Length: 144
Image (cartoon, rainbow, N blue to C red; front, side, top):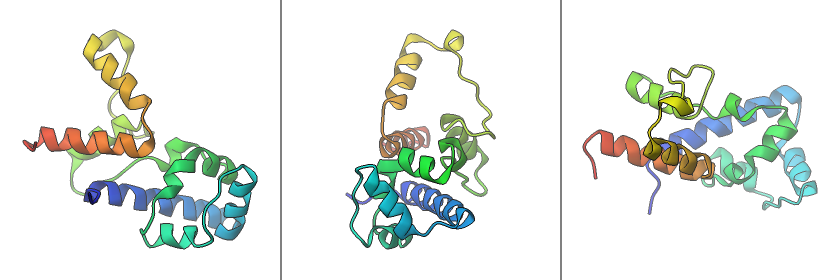
């Protein structure tokens, strides 16, 4: 099954932010892959190129380690901007708890079901979170 365009766009933006951070730190992707391997995370020698051209998004499986190597917080790279669509911007920014978030989630103002949904979301991988967001947006817009 092909990934929805929103997921492709999201992972492309994350890669771009990682690539910018690597450039700013003066690190090549070859060096970054070597540092990942030192942490026990192996990728094929073409992984960075595959990430760049969108052939693979396996970097999402090691975001914590990439952020550590690049000196980033996940919140610096895991936010999304859908130009021209403020409703989706607000939803995605809120869910990803970006600095531009417009929604504050506190335990006091959520129902039991809402708290369970937040807990499920927090325990998903990045790709799982994006799948859940995509599904929720589809439901919101009348999709199935």
